[in-house]
Length: 97
View 1 (cartoon, rainbow, N blue to C red):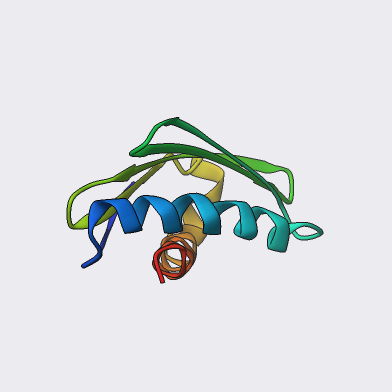
View 2: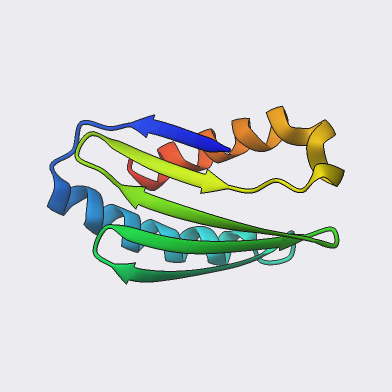
């Protein structure tokens, strides 16, 4: 699934917020999920979310005017696809605020 979240920040500010808030998000999820993040370069983050026996690998790309999240949702979670997409949109928007 590909989810694009538009933003109006300049690239340096978007990078700063993404790095700062990704670490905060991982800490806040503790107890509900295990979240790990790493950056392969300034504009690409890899995030792994583990909860309720499932692990989702996400690729996050910071583009000029949008944050693009790529995530493969297992067939066994197909029933929750819309809920997962909504949560990704909500949390991704908060990463850049």
